[in-house]
Length: 130
Ligand SMILES: [Zn+2]
View (tube, rainbow, N blue to C red):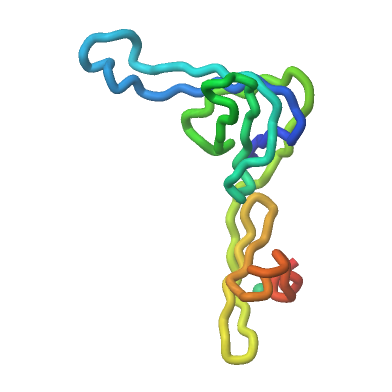
């Protein structure tokens, strides 16, 4: 399924909804809604579906999101746009001499379990599956 991930530099408004853990006491609604607006910046999580929002709010200066989160209900674009990523996951076992490495493609990005990939973020095993 394609997943919409806002591009860095876009200005967006994000709406998230979480179950209200106090609702069983008869207080308020069953869900709590948060709306945050800001500029998309690089997430601290090195994952294809993560993004962060710099809000300018001193209490929550940066909010982290996953574009695949069930809690994320809406993204509105004030300016900017999104990358549409394929969230299908595919994996290959690559034999190399006496070792076996695992190459995984997720969100259009490849990772490998070999040492070369840890240092260079690329390796010949990834080259073999591309
Ligand atoms: Zn590799």
